[in-house]
Image 1 (tube, rainbow, N blue to C red):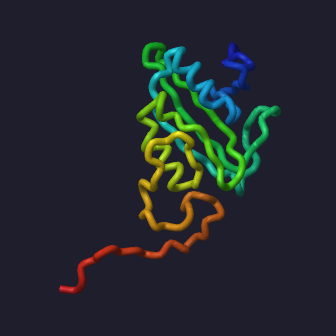
Image 2 (cartoon, rainbow, N blue to C red):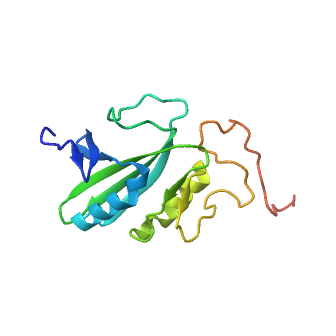
Length: 162
């Protein structure tokens, strides 16, 4: 993608396997998503997180400060047949990111999953509760510092022997 601009909506742009990647500062997250929505990127295909605790080296532009966590959002423009990926650096163990629910209601379950597995909260989310783990579960299993082998087997009202 030799014709790739250096910035789009004022944020650094790179390419990954032919896909445009925008490196969005957390304070501009909703603003850039809104601008992309206005351009026709009206479908949020995926929203997830990555914990880089044990893998600090990664490909990001030089002016982007790497953080432990990264929110990754894939948006789709059906009319233009284009995808764009957003990578948002999230600092701190108890981090909060603005929710995309008002603009992309389909992100509701994806944001809950990131909250449940990584402990990243989404400000403005209508129902930020656990979605995969039991409500009384302690910790966030996809964090790299979550103890391996520590997951106890939990049965609720398991039937007894017959």
